[in-house]
Every structure is written in structure tokens, then in C-alpha cells.
Image (cartoon, rainbow, N blue to C red):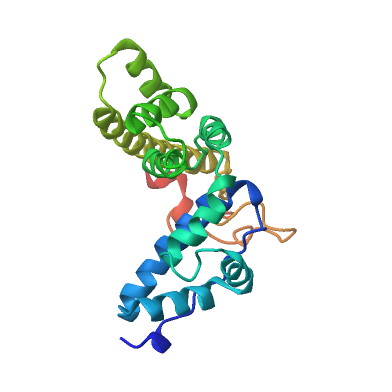
Length: 235
């Protein structure tokens, strides 16, 4: 696939957030590698030229100032320039502050935590993520289960978390349907039943009009003042 047919990447901005330059550059490079694969670019000279073009003018100027920029691997040279700004303590702090959002599923929270943990240099990433879900997750059921069972595995916790979310969503759906039925029944009970006139059988009152059966003769009993359909002698 020709490179010109691939959508250009957004330029990298080193100064947009100085506290995360290293992490952002790593993510940008990952997307750039995908770009190279999609564009079927294999020549190293073309790769370097395209990186400097796609990364933008700021990265291009930085690359020109590097002593080993022309001889060393182009990615490594720029990465080492940003690496001093990598702060493991700060990255770990950001990880510890992460909390699960109200509408965030356990899988979404897990993915976000794994992305943050990538730059923390944890010895056991799964354990750290598990503890973060236990302490800063929204599920009290998961928290209780993890505290009750020290051997509760991370994999089982994720499985249970999905089950709890599914059952909770189903319960909410049932409750909403029940409330809807209750509201319909309450509305029906609150609506007054239509009154019927004892003499003509039509709606009562007659909106300031005389009853149409006032002068009528009943075809059933022959008595004046009502229609046959409401005649009390019909049994």
C-alpha cells in the first residue's frame, strides 16, 4: 500500500504536557510503527525521513541537535532525549490515584490501569492492578470477596466483576419494568371513571344541555323520562 494513501498522523507535541513526554512519545512511536506497517515501508532511510516529517517540526529540530542523531537508530536517539523526563515516582503516584468511574466497566478500568502501570516499573503488574481495583474500584462485592479470600486470583476477580456488572444491569432493567407497570397502574387508578346518566345512558353531566331522554317514552315500559336501554324493569 502506498504511503500517500494512508491518513497522515498528528504531529507530536513535546511541550504540551512536560510531565508525560516520555510516555506520550512511546505511545506515538507505537502508532507510528503501525503506520509504517500499513504503508508497507521497509527502507530505514525512508522510515527515518517519514518519522521526522510525521512527528512535526519540534521533534525535527530536537533530532538535529542530537550528537548521534545521524548515526544511531533514529527512534532510540529521540527516545533517549525524552527519557530523562520519565519520572517513575510521579507515574506511580498517578497510578495510585486512579479510581474507577461511575460508568466505567471493570474491563475498561483494568485496561486504563494497565496503561498507567506500564511506566511504573512494577515487579508484579497484575498484583498492583488487582490491588488498585480492590481499593479504588466501585464494586463493594469484589472488595469484600478479595478481603475474605487472600488467594482470590486476579483472573477470577475480573470474571466475577463482569458477572456482577451483568447481573446488576439485569436487575436494574427488571426494576425499571416493574416501576413502569406500577406507574401505569397508578395512573389508571387515579383516572376517574366516566359517569353515565341513569336516564339516557350517555355521559353525565350533559355539559349544560338537557338530558335527551327527558321527554322520551321508554319503548320497554312505556314510562316517560328514560330510554329503554337503561330501563330498570328490564331485569
